[in-house]
Amino acid sequence: MQSRKKVMSLESMNPMVKETKLPIADHLAQRAEELQQDLKQGGKGRPYSEIMKCHTGDICSMGQKPNTFIQQVAAICAYPELLKSASMPEDVKQRAQGILQGVDGFSIGGYNLRYIDYSVPEKIAKFIERRDGGIPSNPRNIIGCHGVNLCIMNVMDLVTTKEPLKTGVLVPVPHCPVYTNALVLADAIKVPYQLDEGNDWALNLQELRQALQEGRKHCNPKILCIINPSNPTGQVQSRKCIEDVIRFAAEEGLLLFADEEKQRAKEFLAENARLTEEMFRQIPGIYCSPIRGSMYAFPRIDIPEKAVRQAQEQGMEPDVFFCYKLLEETGVFLAAGSTFGQDEGTYHFRLTLLPPKEKLKSVLQSIRDFQKKFFEEYS
Ligand SMILES: Cc1ncc(COP(=O)(O)O)c(C=O)c1O
Image (cartoon, rainbow, N blue to C red):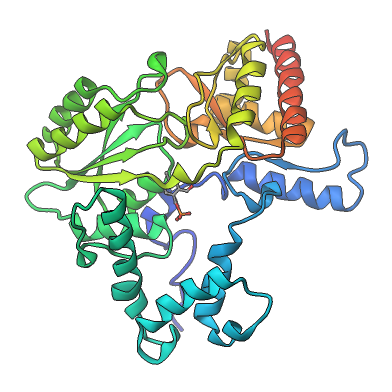
């Protein structure tokens, strides 16, 4: 009998999928999970009692309250009986009713996707018109997706072609890996443009122009991705920069992906941003650009040569090595800069500003103490 090979195994699977990465699903995340399990069993000998998950912008895992209005509207749309419930606030009921009235059968279940194609886009278009002082917005140009990630993947799939050259996608460096993942899966070519760390991570139009020219030598750049506020740097681009970029995209015939996902960051983060900047300013070997409007800080770190060599011997990026040791010794879980791309020879980490103030203080103190010890050990 012929020996049967598994159709789906690590060896036989789509190699593109293996190239994708996310800070919530890498080796560091795996180790954090093991440590968390160990802590549940008592974590004997460990000088900390919890894993501080500062590697992602997950509001819930950081103990912040989610937006209950959205949760409640979604719950009523899925189960309209809740309209009768006294536990649902009146404004929530009104919003849900407005959505349900626009769909067949007053329900969003089954194959009924009218709320994505009609009911919700009509409301969004009205909002945009109001916001923009009456400039008309066509609901047929608004597409709903379940999360930004899926939206990026769907549109990239839609635009990419292979002939005569593969499609190029201009992405900032650093950038959150959802873009690399989407373009790898769509078999498109990454055309990186560097953000200017020395100038608070500003987007430089000249750099963008050069990257486009470079890209045109080996692919057909069709998409320009702008992430504003930036993930991971936290930078917010100026109005002039945004206008210049829109003009540039129009002149060069590029489809503009303007990702403003991180605009959800809240006011309370301003206080945490101040605290973080202040602390990092006092730590030798850590350099943090001003944090403007996002939920992250993305400081550069010095890593001593001896630590770089040891990381390489262990097959790790030096900043992963730093984050690994920090996690192991303090329970603080950061995302390594190499996950997002960075200038050759520079190292960074990304820290979410979401923990409540007192917890964030303790996280920053742990980073400060660890950094001192790390330097003494490897210098
Ligand atoms: C800039 C940016 N775009 C897209 C995404 C993916 O968003 P979603 O979780 O809605 O799929 C993220 C996630 O953190 C992000 O930071």
